[in-house]
Length: 454
Image (tube, rainbow, N blue to C red; front, top):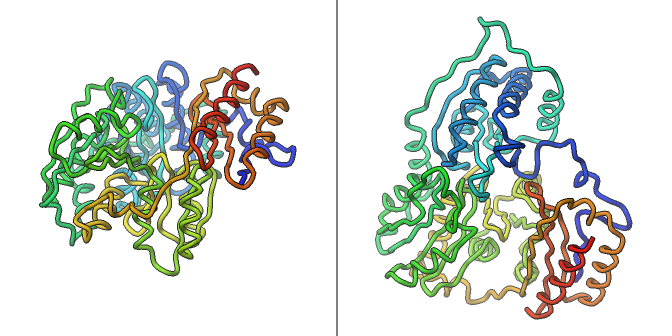
């Protein structure tokens, strides 16, 4: 089955991919600290967001961050911006992104986290959460973007905001994670965690050890620069090597801000978001369904069809998965990249919650991942993230799209082609899926080779 790309359909372009004036991407605002995310812009962003939120009747904002060295600078810049608009600021310190979401929801306040997620330390970003712990809707993002075009002016001195600190932020989140699984005993497990030298470095080991597991950690010594550096869910080789050396039952890798997860079985098998959705689908209720994305493996979709589980795809990005889950009143969705959303337990994608969900789902099988996956085999899928100076030049190229069409015709009903620009980086993502790995590799490489010449 061929997959229509989200960018171009029947000769027309999805203009949202081509807009150059947008600051918000698929996961907040993100970019290099020396350019896009410089302190002057971030101060004005705080002012603009604060001004708009005050108009919405919101007077306080929670601010968390991951472990990037630039977090100190941007935290101060945001603090100044919000206070200048007249909003009070509550600082949380280092916190996983889903922890900020939880605290926003439980305190009935908006929150934001300073993080560039899985990117290296040179980048940073801002993710916003509403009082429900969910990401800002597009309409609110656009109001903030429009406010950014205005001259920044501080409120009168008597109306300036104030700053305070929530000293027990991490403890509150740890208790939330543990209390979500009251019947989960991990005392028989030896678990190796890779915290990506990021925001989960302190929280995650405590959650799993306090549930009884024998916990060892790597990537848990952040220095401000080593976040996501050859570690974490985007670089699972480090975890695989350590699993091979030691006597561990399972390995769990987080990304820098704790909203993505990969799981490593004791034999070195890597489980991505599709594998996790397969495992968790066994516990889904009859009146619910599952949301995936355009990247979800076709084999998983066929499995859901065979088992009469409703399934829909969205564009790539956990915010779109969450929107569809909310619309459908379902609770399980995710992406192969490791964003897994379990709305019956958390308000957004939460890697620690997802890991505990998997362990809870397989506890009756003696925590055997191989047994849990024995009925699932994914179609070979080749993905190339191609760095380019101008993604839009490729997007509008008729020569490139003719090659895409020819590839889709060659695959027929036994494959898919997906082309999309990154929402956060200067990349074109090219994916080809078929029943044979060589076919996927050859066709994907051919499209990438052509894209490089345009």
